[in-house]
Length: 156
Image (cartoon, rainbow, N blue to C red; front, side):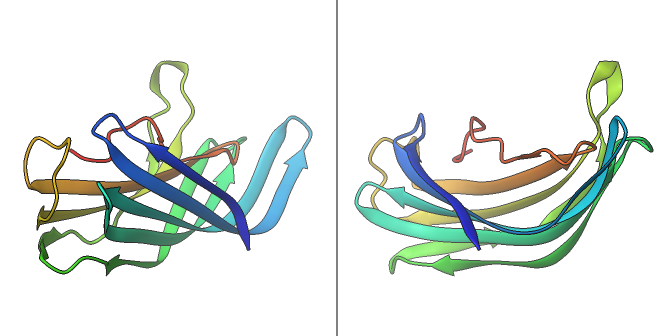
């Protein structure tokens, strides 16, 4: 089920549309702790100027337990849709997953999925070069809080 859709323009002038789909089995609180599971599909479409370049998506099942201080993820699906002719895919990295990251210096541990694709060509108004890497990152911490790092650069 689509639960949110947001469109914004990043600092490079790239228009990004983010859609979040969630199948939630629910948070199961145990006193002051939480334990649960979330199945989510995250999708980002990148538009440079008037041209849509690519849509990236990842789908994963996140599990967390605040009392045990753990967060894990299983990648269920990943992919992309190449929208524009004349724009070449230079590198399509497989999605990377990581469990139980961070948590040092008082932070919360999290698990994440990171998907990247590098493309070249097309209209590059506002971009430093015609070769750009687009990124989709989603993480869930030990309290079941999901984030997409919307302030990270989408073009690197």
